[in-house]
Amino acid sequence: MASDSKHRPVYVISVAAELVDMHPQTLRLYERKGLIRPGRSSGKTRLYSERDIEHLREIRRLTQELGVNLAGVEEVMRLQHELDDLQGEFEAEIARIEGELRQQGQARELPSSGAPTDPKDRPVYVISIAAELVDMHPQTLRLYERKQLIRPGRSSGKTRLYSERDIEHLREIRRLTQELGVNLAGVEEIMRLRHELDGAKANLEGNVRRIQQDITDRMTKWRTLPAPYDEEESTEEE
Image (cartoon, rainbow, N blue to C red; front, side):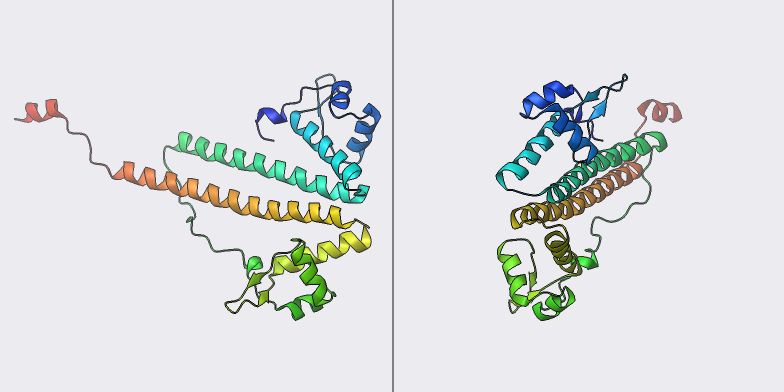
C-alpha cells in the first residue's frame, strides 16, 4: 500500500466510529463484509486511517443519501480498494525502477512510451450489434449513454461505435441491475468508478513507461559524453 500519510492506521475503532457518526458494531460489520480494511496494531487492535474514514463516509452517503443497497455498496467499495491498490502498485514500481538503477548503474532496455492502445478499447460495433451482444434494446444503450454509464466512440460520420470494453461495461450494468438489484444511483457510482479505474490504469502504465524511457534516454546521454580532459596528464606527456 502507498506510504501516503492518508493510509497510516492511527484511529482506534471508538474514535473512527465517532468521526463518521456510526456505532462501532457497524464498523465491525462493514469489515466482515470487506467494505473496509482497517489495519492492526502489534496487539491486534483495529486501527483506521484517514482513507478508511473517507471510505466509511462514502458508504454512509451511498446508503443514506442515494439509497444504494448493500450489494451495490460492496461493488463500489471493491472498486475504491482497487484504485487504492493501483496507486500503491504504481509507487512500488517507481521505487523498484529507482532501486534497479542504483544497483546496476545502468538502465535496462525498456518499452517505448508509444505503446499501442489496448485493442479492447477500439470502437468497432454499431449500436444494433452492441445491443444484440448484450441482449438489450438500442434505446436502452442510448439511455445509458445519456446517464454517462457508457461512453461509446464515434465514427467520422458521428455513428456510435462500441468497443469490447463497452460491451463488458454493459454486461456489468445488466448484472448489477438484474442480478444484484442495484438502483440506478448505485449503478452510476459503480460505473463512474469503473471508468476512473480504467483511466487510472492506462495513465499509470503510461507514466511508468514515460519515466522508464526518460531514464533510458538520460543514461544513454551520460554514456556517450566524452571523457573529461585531464590537464595534468596532458602536461606530463609534453
